[in-house]
Amino acid sequence: MLVFVDTNVWYPVVLADLVLRSVEIGLFDLAWTDESLTEVERVLVERKGLSAANTAIFCAQVRATAPEGRIDPAADVGRTCRVVLIESFFVPTRLPQP
Image 1 (spheres, rainbow, N blue to C red):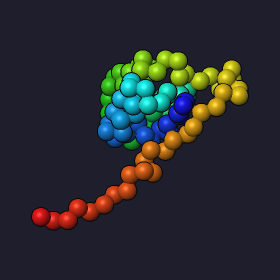
Image 2: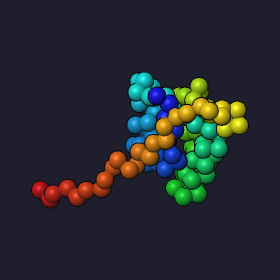
Image 3: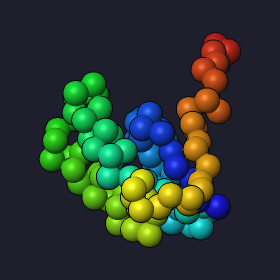
Image 4: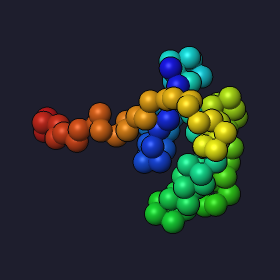
């Protein structure tokens, strides 16, 4: 199954790690576009305060983990994938005090 994850899934690091490890063990194949990773870099720098150098390294890792997942919107017309908003599965809860 080819899965495209939204920009908001790449931060916090726990979610990014979950996605990349899932791809590495074969749970799904990751789809991405150059535009989506450019957006990830911008958001991580502007909104999350990460350095441009670190975000570039991170996006290079995404590309290296799933090189065959690159989608060119102009050339890949008709290629389908699922869009997953992983954050919607996490519901903040309060843990009881001991």
